[in-house]
Image (cartoon, rainbow, N blue to C red; front, top):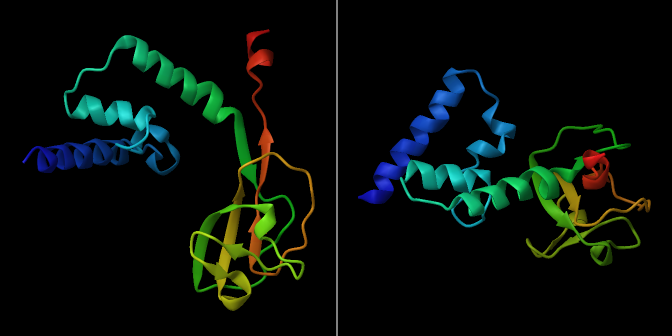
Length: 154
């Protein structure tokens, strides 16, 4: 019964944001995550009327604002030239990139060259300026650090 009430409260929370014309699709406040400690986790706990210590709140907010938001992803070169049937986001591991530009996705256990009607958007885990040869249906996002915690303090 508790889960149904929490689901209803969560839905109302998101509907309020929508009626106030907030862009909740890109706002971490509305990613009501129960398995990872983030801002949405705090909001979910608040909706559930569960107490969270002020220290834990501070640490989570600090982590969200300085550690996790310290970089952004972007597509710097690749233009999409055709329409695709599906879109898949997955993590990029350089060792899974083949010499012919195809990619073996270990999460789906497939090689991208076998699925040319799917646009694969690969998200790097590390910062890299290395250029990779990629087949047409692959986009490798770049990660850049646009917030340096030391420069913010000055």
